Image 1 (spheres, rainbow, N blue to C red):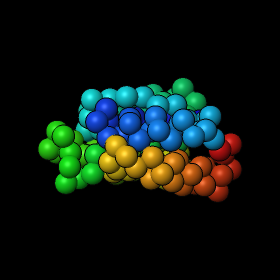
Image 2: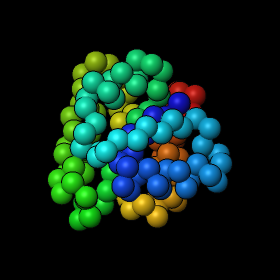
Image 3: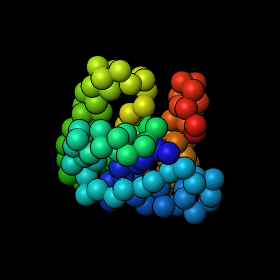
Image 4: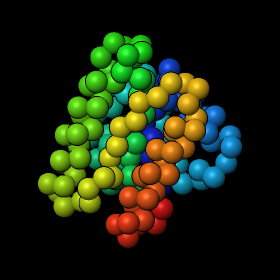
Length: 125
């Protein structure tokens, strides 16, 4: 299972469009007002609840509706990646993707990339 925290302005429309095309049965989408609002504890809780990977999906950096939300989310995803390694979990299970609302293919590619990481490390995806 891959949990995607999606910005309501860009990530969510792209995710919904990608979901309509099928093939993403292992994806759980959680809408957030801004990718920058995703806290570390939320991501860690997703892993405790069985997620194999987490994507944080935010606006393009130059087009963030909250000005700095995508930058905050990108920095936070780097810290989360280090935290995951510190607690003994595999590298690459947290990723940030920046996209526009019409980029469903880019969302799908991010999911496929996460699946590849999970498979390489012996997961189910």
